[in-house]
Image (cartoon, rainbow, N blue to C red; front, side, top):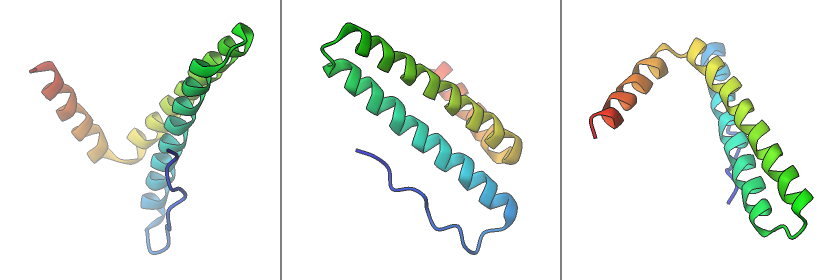
Length: 91
């Protein structure tokens, strides 16, 4: 299932708009990774499987780009990401 983006951004301050654009970009790229991985699982042609897996990997790079930008624009996201990391490490 694909996400419902873009969202309405009216009423947000410019810095919040940029944060939401980064989040929407992450969501779109995650959708793309899932789509290409699913198609690769069903593809019959080995070359097509390989191509789709490669494209999915490229989308993961795009996720990293959006995430890096989001972390520059949203200090709270940095803090909460660290909290999440600690919680996983404590499991």
